[in-house]
Length: 282
Ligand SMILES: O=C(O)C(=O)CO
Image (tube, rainbow, N blue to C red; front, side):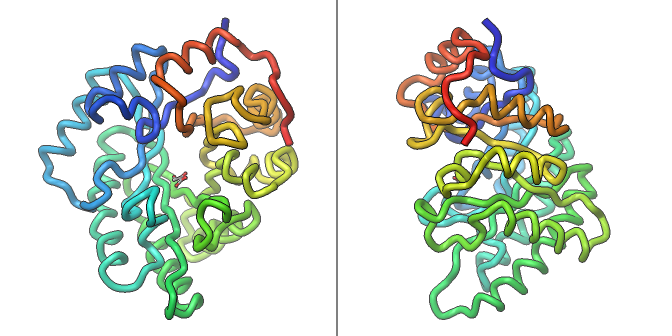
């Protein structure tokens, strides 16, 4: 049977975690997927030794995989950090130190998308001060992405799992992307439509797709509730993918879910189930 969509990618920061990072691209290829994405792989280091970057680059290329998305440095994701670019002081400095490193890596891989997680609100810091810093850093990131031939992505997370993260709706993420584009004049900042986070936040996914497919640079999917594999929750990946395609979105849809067991097993089941609709599109 076929997969629910021809342009599915795998997030190797959540899938195949039973393997060392450098073995995951080959595991993705063995499961029949050539497109992969990553969170920033060094949560404690915005500028790792070049040998480590070279080893990851070699593993991706030797597996014949294509890197279609990369998170910029975001602190200790998924806990407790959700980004560094709006955090004054050392974290903002680490984000800025990461820009040339991540952009150069993306350019060397032909990676088309760099995801900039906003960062949590900090107690005792005025939100407007965090937002001013964030816009400065997003402008720097958009310019770095442009030099690498990539888009910069702005993602909404869900407030239940990220209560201090300020971007929790599609409207807010798209409005920020518009502000960055207005500030840079580059037009390379786009919405990262994470269907799991939006569904977890109660969004009408069909409405978000219809309204924002044209502003979307990348899509991620995990089923909801549960952030598991397609078919484990109430969402219908095939129907959502079809709606995205009908709305003109031609990019990748990355599977960014937490598998209940070995990733290869779930992916084989996904391929076996084919495009049959399993639920609603919310
Ligand atoms: O933190 C998350 O859940 C993300 O999706 C990061 O990209």
